[in-house]
Image (cartoon, rainbow, N blue to C red; front, side, top):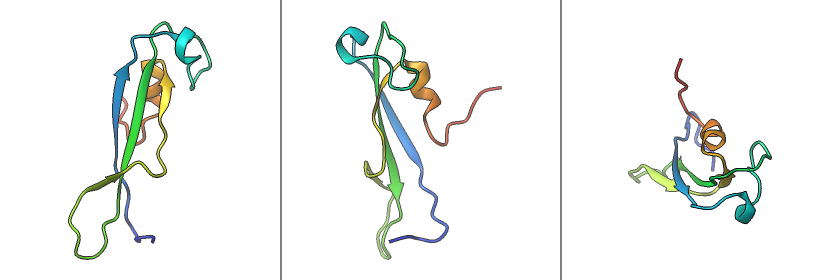
Length: 83
């Protein structure tokens, strides 16, 4: 069900695996070797049904990735960049 005007918010968790690309493979963003591989999970809000209060979080339609921390941060939606 689509709710007109609803814009989801995203949140992320980053975890250092303590391992390199030798165990987890190359960075899923840039394709290069990573001496320190990070794992990023993504969740988003969804529009509540009438009468529900939120926010409610889901993993549906989200992407989890392995790679360099900097590469993973660059893929976060709604992320503000520093100037």
